[in-house]
Image 1: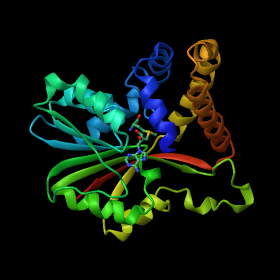
Image 2 (image 1 turned 90 degrees about the vertical axis):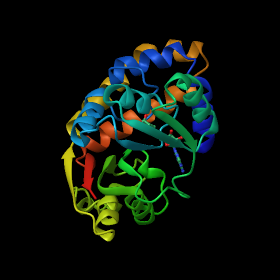
Image 3 (image 1 turned 60 degrees about the vertical axis):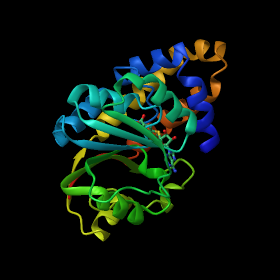
Image 4 (image 1 turned 120 degrees about the vertical axis):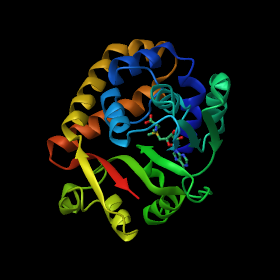
Length: 255
Ligand SMILES: C[S@@+](CC[C@H](N)C(=O)[O-])C[C@H]1O[C@@H](n2cnc3c(N)ncnc32)[C@H](O)[C@@H]1O
């Protein structure tokens, strides 16, 4: 996946068709590469009740446009972390004039080195999938939170297209039974969840329609690797939701 993200962040920022894709699918072009549209992002900001004096960590921030949006909306001091140096470079360059409330670091979710008791909130928008040990990652995030700090994690979970239906354990789909829930429970963290599955289904359908409309322009910009990746996700998710084997949750944790 790393090769994909290197190519993605190298090309997406300057692409007109990708900007239009994001505007039409997510409601605003923040160079998104997850499933979090603007209404989900605003739901997260509301749930976390971020204030100007607070510190926020955005895990897997990409080129940092979501972190910048959150800081612009709330005044919070947001640090973005991602493992793609080009994405972090773009974020730093674009937000130079906002460096009093935005910082970006290259880091790996599998090798987190975070200050203890530092952040008021940690957010992860479709990035937990890249952790190879959820329990360890949650422990590190929990240690970097100040007392009363909050975690907000957008997490989709379900049958991947290559897993035969009969081999997928549907009993792990409820929000308290997913691998992420297991990791939170293992860290003695209580949580509540908001179910965004129907929103995810709608988004997957819109994504397929918009991609079909824009396909000639993805071709013209030689960005079919982005088109194929986005279309593959959208088709896979729509199909898994129709089978009742895919869920999308916002996990909210108070430390
Ligand atoms: C699905 S995208 C989500 C990006 C953004 N949060 C959003 O919602 O649009 C996943 C992001 O996680 C980053 N990522 C993947 N593996 C990572 C890792 N091991 N450590 C840090 N970041 C990682 C990718 O570079 C990418 O920016």
